[in-house]
Amino acid sequence: MSALNRTFLEKIPKTDLHVHLDGSIRIDTFLEFARESGMNLPSYTEQGLRETVFKDHYRDLDDYLTGFSYTATLMNSRKRLERVAYELALDNQNEGVRYVEVRFAPQLHASGEMDLVDCIRAVNDGLARAESQFNSRPEVVSGKEPPFRYGIIACAIRFFTPSFSEWYRRFFEMHRYSDRERIFALASMELESAAAGARWKEGLPVVGIDLAGSEEGWPAMNHAETFRQAQRHFLRKTVHAGEAYGPESIYQAITELYADRIGHGFTLLNPDAVTSERIEDPKMYVDTLSGYVADRRVTLEICLTSNMQTRPSLRRMEDHPFGEMMKRKLSLTICTDNRTVSNTSVTDELLKAVNAFGLDPDDLRNIIVYGFKRSFFPGDYREKREYVRRCMNYLEQVEEEFLEGGGGPHPGSSWRGKDFIPEWDPEA
Image 1: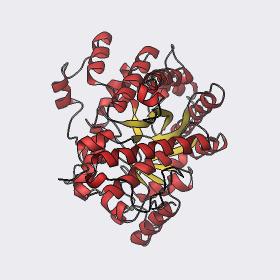
Image 2: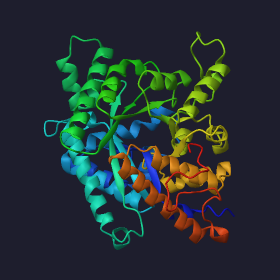
Image 3: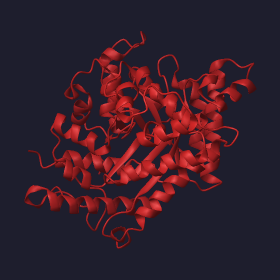
Image 4: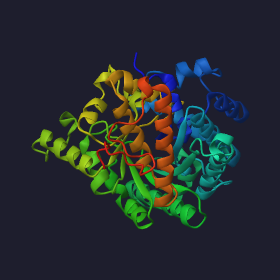
């Protein structure tokens, strides 16, 4: 049996850089909100919802996204947003996640009660309360264990209709004479301005922006000005790309939206997923693109369970491109995507990676290191280096406690007492 078992994986310090707030609401909380709001649901029990809404298997991405129409509607007040964020932080803390970047689209929750910044503020209040409680623990105060930290990512959406939310309805109404793609672009610009204001005027830990939603037919190019604006505001950038469309989507995210990270990137290495007739040699295209991603250390936020659920043709976990990505030494971090919709946790995702791809301790360390190093940490560079150093030192302590022969770092490691960058890390 592998020494990298569940007990060990729960104990080590971890990150989740790709987790959606409205896809990670606790089911009992979801049911409570639904009863309070009088919402009609397919079932009012956890088992029933697991069979009808938050399922183990989905037909496709659209089926997977059905649950969000319920959750986004219910998370429509400051109190509810704060509670869901607070509970999400607790769930992460309870399995050893020490840093999380919670992403959500304030546009789906804003109403007459809340504007975009109000929504961000409510989520921050919940996360901050959980952070304060955790960091007051004696083992954290004493320095024995690293603290819990977090950032918030604001999601722009590629495509929407007035029915998505009250905010979107009003936005369409105010721009009734503009074509749809122009409206999508303007909405993204408005979100970015709110996110930048929340970060730089109010001091909220909004660390970056994201672009989510249907890829096919709604190219990233429509939102290029938003991401140029984010660049000027020193916000970091991640983009859902290569999840439900080909490598060209990843190319646009990197070259036009300046993406620091890619959400999913599932099709990056698949020449058969190339759709553009202008690309004469798809294999050369994906090799060149993946080589650029590797060289620039653009990190891929890998969501194994989510990809299995949205791609029914993917029968075995071993067939996920994560294995080939590992062989090509790409910068990878394991994420949940949606804890409730995918019925998963960071520990679950790491365990699946270990079992399906035979990860050894060095492989696991690289994944853990990338999660911390490629985070959009809200503090300054020196603070981030110190924080990552503390987390890596704690990882080493857990290795020494759990792994056969005392575990410990790779013989070339130099993170203890010097720097958080191990010499065996490909970035060193």
